[in-house]
Amino acid sequence: MPYTLIITAAAHKDTSDAYQYYEKQQKGLGERFLTSLTIRYSDLSNHPTHYSFIEEDNLKIFRDCLLYKFPYVVVFEIRKKEVIVYAIHNTYKNPDKKIRKI
Image (cartoon, rainbow, N blue to C red):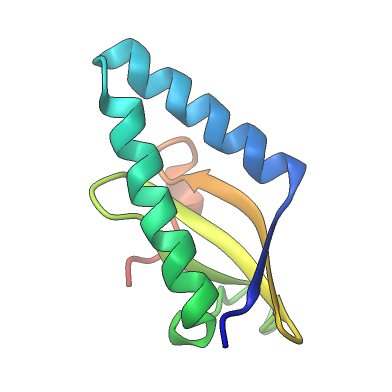
């Protein structure tokens, strides 16, 4: 049974910002970004435990997964039967904190 996907307001803003950026670069590229994100959301809903933890101060709370063909990761947490998406992180904006590829 799929997990319930909850997208925070911050993750919605990240998504909107990325979409607008890509559409300005090339018409239709924002749509390709959204398609990639939608596919990843489906993966997360069905198999959220397949993705690795983000190691920070030895805490294993948050996980991440890379988008296909875009330099973004989805940062999320699993709580019971819910997957809470906190951010759609652009790995180019802060290369010192680049989250590993899966």
